[in-house]
Image 1 (tube, rainbow, N blue to C red):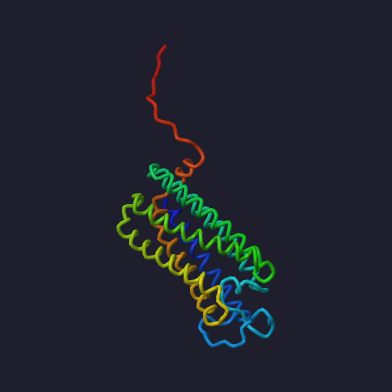
Image 2 (cartoon, helix red, strand yellow):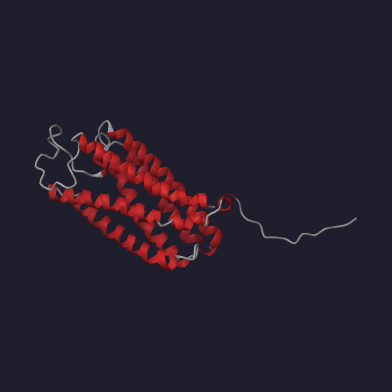
Length: 248
C-alpha cells in the first residue's frame, strides 16, 4: 500500500524538525552556544551555570524551559515511531525472506534496545538526571550503530524491492559514516577542552542527520509493505492443505 511509504518519511521528519526546532529555541534563549561559533569563551562548566551557554549538543539543547518540553515530546515520538519501524521491517523480512529470520531478529533486538535507550534519555533531563540520561543516550547510539550494520547486511541478502543494487551502496556509505562518527563522538565527548566538546556536538548532529537519511531510504521498502505482513509476528502461518469436498 502507498500509505506505508509515509511511515519512514514521518519518522525522519519528526526527528529532524523536532530536534532542530529545540536547538533553535535553546539558541534564541542563550541556553546553548552556536554551532557555528568556535571561539566561545563563556561556555558553562562545572563551576558556572549562569551567564554562560552550554555546548550545543542535542541533549543540552533540551535541558531548560521552554524547549525541554518539546525536546521530551520529540524524543518520545521519535522513539515510538522508531520502535514501530523496527517491528514492521522485521515483519517484512519474515514475510519475504524467512530464511534470514535469525539475522532480522538480532537487528530487531538492537533496534528495540536503541528505542528504549532514546526514550530513557529523552525523559531524564541531562541537567537533573545526567547519569540516566547519558547512559540511555550511550546505549541508544551504540545499538543504532549495530542496527544500521545489520540492516545493511539484510539489504544485501534480501530482495525486498528490486532496487537493492542502488540502495545497498547508499546504505553501506551511511553505515560507515554512522560507525566512524560514533567512535569519534565518543572519544571527543570525554575531553575537557571546549574545541573538542564543540566538535563532538557537531558529530552528534551528524549522527542524527545521517540516521534520518538512512531511515528515509526505507520509504522504498515500505512502498511494498502490506498490513498482512504484521500477522507474521502474531500468528504462525499454517501450510496450505488441499480442500476436500465430501458429498453425502
